[in-house]
Image 1 (tube, one colour):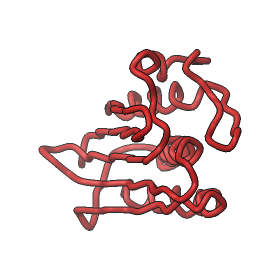
Image 2: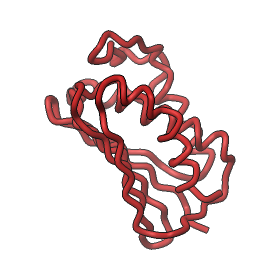
Image 3: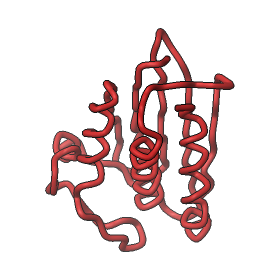
Image 4: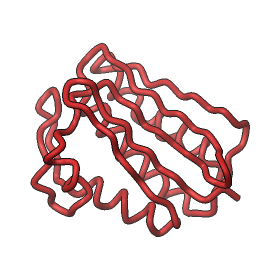
Length: 149
């Protein structure tokens, strides 16, 4: 699977939602083709979830960047938002099912608390991993690392 194509598809499908909040989604690709072994539909679900969360928790007028690079046999995808951030107390729970860290978006958008749990499971099935860094009031960076082909 060309992961860049999957991510471009995800951005295109979520573009109207971002536009309603006046959020710009930028794509930064450092390689022309980045291939991983996996399910295009499952990987699309991963990036739809990460991007929809970024949109949900980013205030109007801000931006989101998706950065794709390759380093030492890994494809590294970062979803970087300028959102409200996640508290240190909640960071340890965000990948749990029905997490108590679940909350409403910046415009009252609802959440089931399952999205990041499912995202992590899909990434694990693809022999990858996901990490998050976040600062309250400054945003979050979700980093997905997948084995490159």
